[in-house]
Length: 422
Image 1 (tube, rainbow, N blue to C red):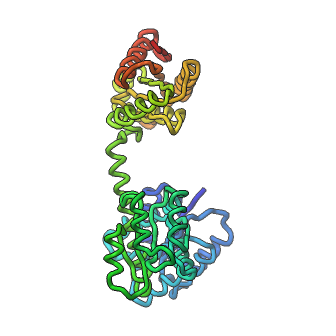
Image 2 (cartoon, rainbow, N blue to C red):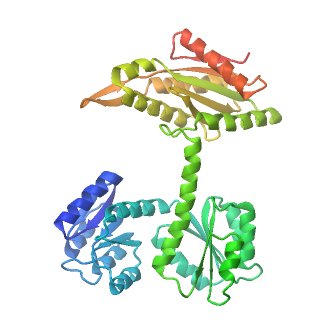
Image 3 (cartoon, helix red, strand yellow):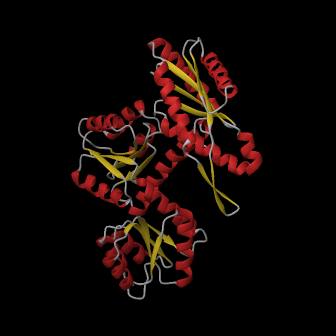
């Protein structure tokens, strides 16, 4: 099991931080109060630590010795300290820490949580460095690996474009200006022809010299620019984080517009927009398409007996089971209330019957465990499903036929699948 290491000699602050981290992140925290105690813990405990939160000034560590220990065990580290002067700051960054946070900031605990969350998710993010200098590629890669990012590199613009095609999930490209065959601003233009700013950020970087470089980069699509000789590590990290945070914010805004807030499934609007395109494509390519309408049986009784909070849990439970059973290529949406809809391709009638009956059976066999007034209860929920195979001229007609099949399933006793292709 993953743990967080907290090294803090103040009893009050240590208890406050430990409780905050465990409640906000749901990760157990091992708390030590000295360098010696931490050495003993790391040398004897068989726990897996994912991150270390380190006080700079400890009774037996006043010059950053605790940072050396964390580095020895390859622990991503955040310094949490009350004294930050230029000397301390220089020592901290020389030890390759991921971040530092001043305790005297009123928002220090919230910032600490945010910094930890960023470190824990950075391993899922890819950054491409494009520079013809092996030294500078190694230098930047080292800085970014401290932050746990996935790093890809290229020393020519042509290679960078190939890597971008091979890794469409790259979120940030760091581009040197002066490179053989293709200069940085030209590469920036080529990237922007395929990748918009909201999907891939670009930071231009170059040696001191031409004062117009920053403008040329920005005008060709870069988000930011840095001069190699003058940036400091702290500034570099801040600009990287700002670019990636903006991309995350845009992505979350997009998802909020197309996702149901309770279940995380697609919403009604997206279902009809994307579903209409899928329907038209299936007609052109002569691909079979099935539409299923799924409704939770006796849902009103659940709300009446247990209340709407438990009703929401039931909806989340059912939506999770539906999503797990469907394929990534299927469109799964919460249409409204306790009703869901699925569009799935390449299913003939026997396959559709098998798929949705397996889903129905899984839901029947997977009760929801509830905590009701301190007591544990299990609630068994079933669904009725209506399925229509494509014979119609529009998605709306398909949905109507699937809805009629759902009505028949309800009329015939619920907890069943009713198929129609007429």
